[in-house]
Amino acid sequence: MKKYILFNVILVLLAYVFVEKDALEKLKKNRGNHFLFSENILKNVKEIRFSTFKIINKNMWVLEKEKFNKLVDQNAVKNFFLQLQNLKIQRSIPGKVSFNPRCSVNIGGSNLEIGDKVAFNENFYVRLDEEVFIVRDITPQTRPLPKEIYRLNPYKHGRLLRFCLTTKVAILDKFIFQKNKLKTIRFDFLTSSPFIVDFNRLSGHPKPLNEHGFDRDVIDIFKKKLVKTEVEALFIARPFFDGEKLGIISINEKLNLEVFINKGKTFLYISTFSLWAKLKNRDLVNVYYQDFWKTSLVQKSKSQKICIQEINNSKMCFQFKNGIIKNTSSSDVEYSSLYILLESLSKNSLVLKNISDYQKVSFKYDKILEINDKKYLLKSKNRIISVVDFNSNYQYEFLKLHLENIAYGKN
Image (cartoon, rainbow, N blue to C red):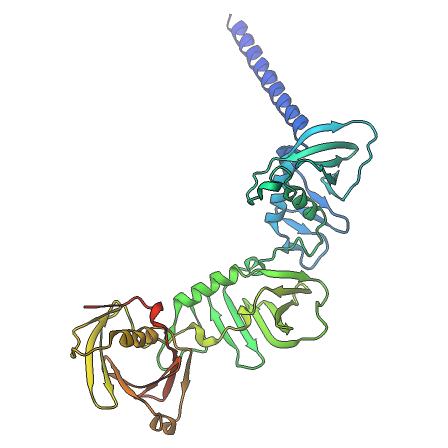
């Protein structure tokens, strides 16, 4: 009796397995009948062949036999596969068909040719191996479309064509600094001394003058900006005939980038990969080592006693904390001018330099500024506020802010 029950249980389980397997096969077949590619097929693809090169899946997509083989834009390949999954078959065209291939790409052994777009809607022709289909890309349309071309939508067809026609350089990731875990960056320009920014320690070299420290927030912001720096284009051959070499930028003391300027554009030569890059702007070559120093004289978050003495010997003192002036010693205060001065000195200076005794003595100041018993000589002219440290031989240059850019109050 027990054997009979066990036999029946095994029969039921086998029936369930075969029914379930049959259901899965029907589901795959049904998807295969409606879509050009299934997700299961695409996830097992190991190579994609373009007209002049191929990329191989080695846990990440890489170029074959190139110095820059690991720079392939992984998101571009991922988005291409997502688009392939969404190519829904509208109808199959049997027999011999006049087909105008715009480009072809071999996906894991299957040859896909992209044809023309249908004139009266968003569908387009493709040929997969020997079969011709009219397909519709059902990928969600994120780009807003003008009402007059909404039904025609040429962008999905164009996007597939662009990837199919891509070159080995165009398929590379344009965010070249994302490929490195940023630890340090060294700027060695021909017109100035080299300097280093250390992202791990939030410091660098040379060290700030006059007992100042590094601005950790500025260093962190610069790192985030660097990761988001996108190159406009990449080239295998030198993209210009002449150009001025500015120097070398070194990432993590390993990746060397030779910097050139040509007709106002910035170019990098990445010797490790024998690759040229054109940057979208000149931000990277306009970096100055003092940009990373914390050289403000007024600390808005700390309570400070500040006194200002005019040339006519009139003197006013007050407390300044969290951007608010308190306990002024004078009732006659021009608050707007005072806040412009305080806000300007709370930013990092444009320049901090060492000066001689003669330069300090001959400095033509118009105010004496005391901050917590430290004395400074101050002169304001046009958009620049010059400040000399009375106790040491250092001069600061601050940018004078506009009143409309300052949120201020008084108590």
